[in-house]
Image 1 (cartoon, rainbow, N blue to C red):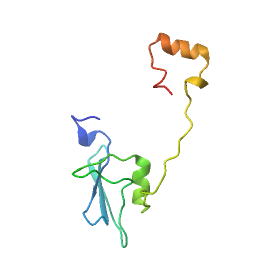
Image 2 (cartoon, one colour):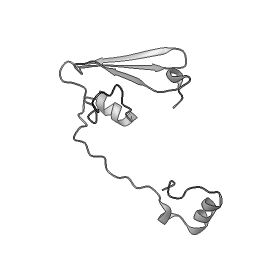
Image 3 (cartoon, helix red, strand yellow):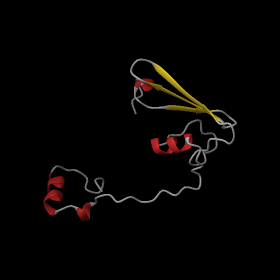
Length: 109
């Protein structure tokens, strides 16, 4: 995370009101700050997971934010495992090359 220039680093800063029916998104678009605001006529914006007690902020992925802004309740959603190439799927020459360069083969999976 680029803490020295936090507002200019490309992150979106999302603010939800206490009732949960309004959201404002603050972001930098190379020429200045921009604000996107959305107010629901009915219902509330729901986070994908419950916040720990006393939490003041939470990080969400872009997909979660997009679904949240569409009004979907992600609290019951289940994230499925996705296929990722692992050590077993690597050929021996590539695995030896990674070990020679001291790249963690477990991290690559």
